[in-house]
Image (cartoon, rainbow, N blue to C red; front, side, top):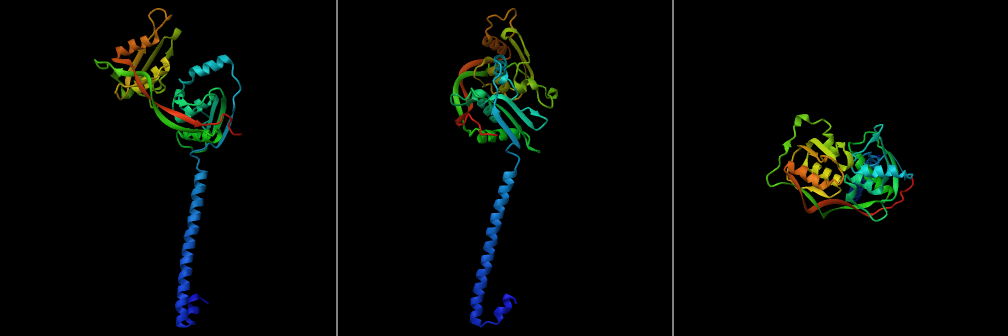
Amino acid sequence: MTLASVSMLLPRRECAEDYSLRTIARCTLIIGGLIAWTLFAGVLIGVCSAASPDTVFEVASVKRAAPLPQQQLFLRELTWEYMDPGFHLVHGRTLRLGSITLPQLIARAYRVRTRQVIVPKGFNSEKYDIEARLPEGAPKDGEYEMLKNLLADRFALRVHAETRNESGLQLVVRAGGSHLKAADPATKRKEGDVESLLARKREPMARGAGYFQSGHCSMAKLADYLSLTLKMLIADHTGLSGEYEVALDIAPQEDADGLDRPARFVQALRKLGLDLKKGEVALDVVVVDSASRTPTPN
């Protein structure tokens, strides 16, 4: 027997009371259904978030690195800042970083140079071996966010960003204007111009002399190259946008003994209508608030 047929057997006064009861019951069912749906939706969202492959490695191993021979360690430290700031994946999905310090890991994750990572004393001595596997279908450049999360999870890393003004050199245009030739877009490779992209020396020369050439070099990349080569803080203050053909030859005419590298670079830059002058340089830094030198177990 339905609720409607039962109400017809009751006196009119009781029907009114029954109507109120049915109204309350209906409201209760509606509210209960909304609560149930809200809870389900919350669980669904939580499951989707937890299962998202976008921000965490599928598998990650972090362990202390074995000591390296002194000569090999020296070469690693010498070339670290010149390396491609991206990641090198093995078999497409496996990331390996060997004998790397925590500041270097942070620099890689936040896409800055190691000198832009401000850490407490003692964090440069420990070295680690990292091996991690990206999930299937990981987004392009997702490794950076995954490495940030790995650092937060395994090293309890907490950081904040700052911009600091420091004494350095400014790359500027000379009074007479630049003599730079604009790059030809037709000659740029699909993957980008390797020499300017990595801002590295094209070919080494004896005793600290050198030669740098790029057919597609921005002034920011040129400043980065100069900063790395001269081991000084140098920032682009030219106001020039776009890419240019740049060649710097600082090889000495005879012998490189006693070569004054900064002076040679200044001479080469002046031929392009550029110069270096002293001044304050704004430097974006990543400051470590807290971190553990002992990563949590694998």
